[in-house]
Image (cartoon, rainbow, N blue to C red):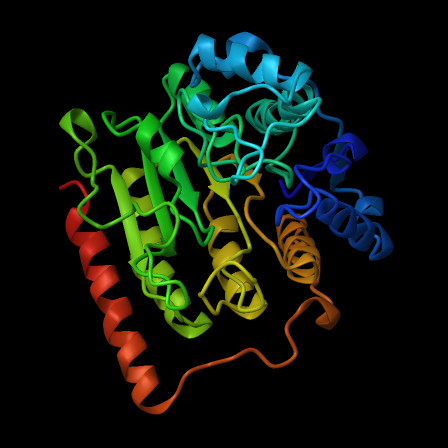
Length: 361
């Protein structure tokens, strides 16, 4: 089966965190409109899915009840004081009117994707508004309010299923890792930039994701981190992905695959220092598509509106098994050579070795 679902509701693309905020939900409109123009939704194997609102019980699979209450209050009165919950007007996750309601819809979109895939009606479903992987049990973080990937992974694990979570956002999937650090029922694999930001001389957000963060107790070896250096290009990224993700998925043999597909790893992204191309992403997403289990896919980071539009459109076409038009690819992606090639490759090889060595035996 190649049937693929695309979760869409204009309401998840209409809110504004803050006028100068880098995360612009309107970016999703470009993805939807590009796919519509390319005829993706007219294909017989495509389904457009309307999200529902998540229930409070579903949200509380991961989040503390007091935190949910604080988000609800901040949604009604965003001018209040909520900094203890990670919500602050001039920080990365500002409170805004209606934030609880739109966050329920965003999470519900991922739950809708999960339900359609696990029912067998679809092979894969993609929710571009989801992938909010930084939110913690009692704290918003990194533009993320409710952690929909963790909620879905938790609900699937509660069914007795083995879940593999693969995160290819430029930032470490810290909230998902934290939620499952003590269990072997959810394997988390994150490929991300790690280390000092070259331009600011401070740790790259969120500052976690070293290879030695490998889980504890029953979860020892089931948190896998590929800690990539700044300026990793597409060639090196593909090598890291291929060396870590497919072999570990084959070894783990999951019942379901959950992916967070942030495209802030793109070389044109203004917030990160990775240099991944759409060509590299096509390779990576095709490898994910080759995993023969139900697949729940989400968006995530991505702050170049054009990179988001082209990459996520391409990735949904891959999910459909449809051809990729040349217009969606980078015209001239960067690639290192000479001494810099050798330096990047050596650092990436070390990241690969660290990730593989940390895995369960």
